[in-house]
Image (cartoon, rainbow, N blue to C red; front, side, top):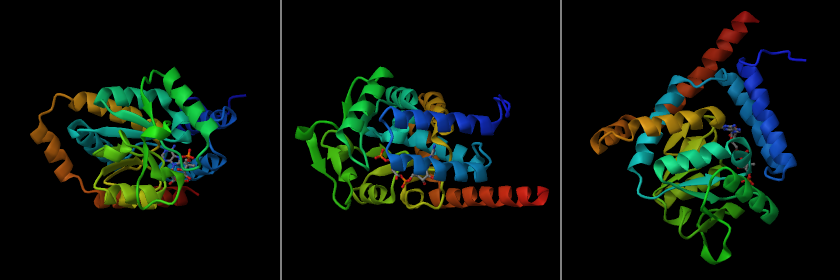
Length: 254
Ligand code: PTJ
């Protein structure tokens, strides 16, 4: 029985939830990934389950930054592999970025399943699985410190969707530009990343691909100007205000 029309944002959220549960059943997602999804859903609801102006601005800045990158890497965890593997591969091709699997809750079987899924979706080279090319990033206690010598370790820009705060901080300290997708504008990752896209990755990643395509012919000066005009802290405050305004509106209706 269909209770909510398919086009309704709530119905789309339920489909995203199903993808994650399926990803868990297929060995891609950690148990803790289900909790992360729940937290994300709550923030998505508060944000109005749509891409706001602040997110759109961050997407544009992220596209400019990625188009100027010399060695961009997209970091993939279990949730991302379950939610948008096709888009990760598409984005990597659009901006010529490497893909590296990097897990918080390390598990060799899960890593293999994630690599299989990315390959099924068109990825050719996936970093993060060979111990002879791994090294450690300092300042991280979790398994996320193990990175590929030819990937995250030498990247200038790292895309880290649905991340924990420690690694974002460590990557920034290592001099890297960090782009994240995080529905919680108050999380440590959101607060420490260079560019935070406060939106559901399942909506925002498609918009980022489109933006990268649109801006691919732009000259470097214009791309630099977009980045210089972007203020992550200010943008995050705008996302917090988006939540406040939605709450006020809903409270008035109730
Ligand atoms: O696969 P692993 O082992 O690398 O583990 C991945 C998880 C996600 C479990 C791990 O990175 C983790 O525990 O992350 P956190 O600390 O729970 O943070 C996840 C953040 O992503 C939270 O701020 C959520 O609000 C946010 N989030 C959840 N779902 C989405 C999201 N942001 C954007 N889009 C989503 N779909």
